[in-house]
Length: 119
Figure 1 (cartoon, rainbow, N blue to C red):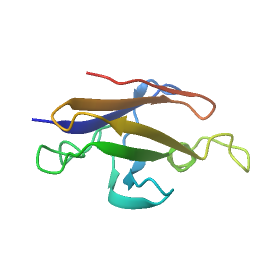
Figure 2: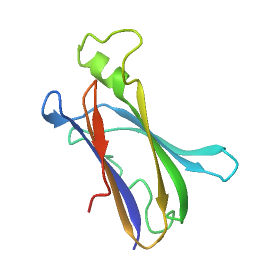
Figure 3: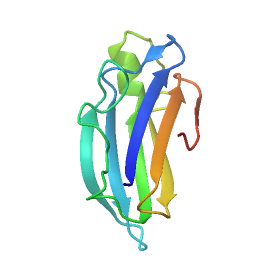
């Protein structure tokens, strides 16, 4: 039963990135994108509705998660320059196995981020 999930941690403040806006898109081979969903992360830095893609909606292909980093930190009262060093963080990744578990965490501050395929 494949699914896609994400989790965002605010490394500047040492907490989940509650309230961060995230967009999930499916990418086609011609540079186009189709928005699948837009969400706001809950108090744990996750999607309230469970997986972003579940067994019924999971498909092999290219995807992009876009995280609204600057807006999140500004809403937390962080004084960022204009333009911010990181405005949005787009993560493009592939799903090769529609039956697999794909977890895409983001560790982020206003100046740096890292990601990996989680478990």
